[in-house]
Length: 80
Image (cartoon, rainbow, N blue to C red):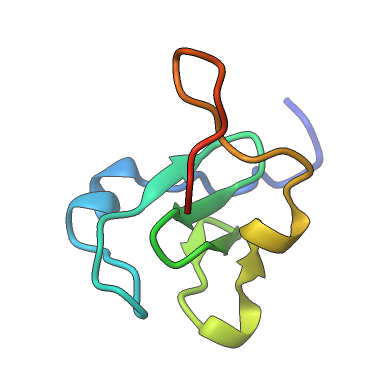
């Protein structure tokens, strides 16, 4: 047993009910960063203590902060 309380985990079933507040598109769960990503809006919404924070002011802009654009299977960058 540990003395530390466990961090609540994000319930992936929530993805079925949640959509991007900007575009109303489906979201993708990024477990490594604990974010819900909306590629269409270019935003990543944080998950804190297992709760998705779906506020636009709290979202991270992924187009501006990602160092490389997504690539197609052929290795060519995607046009946005």
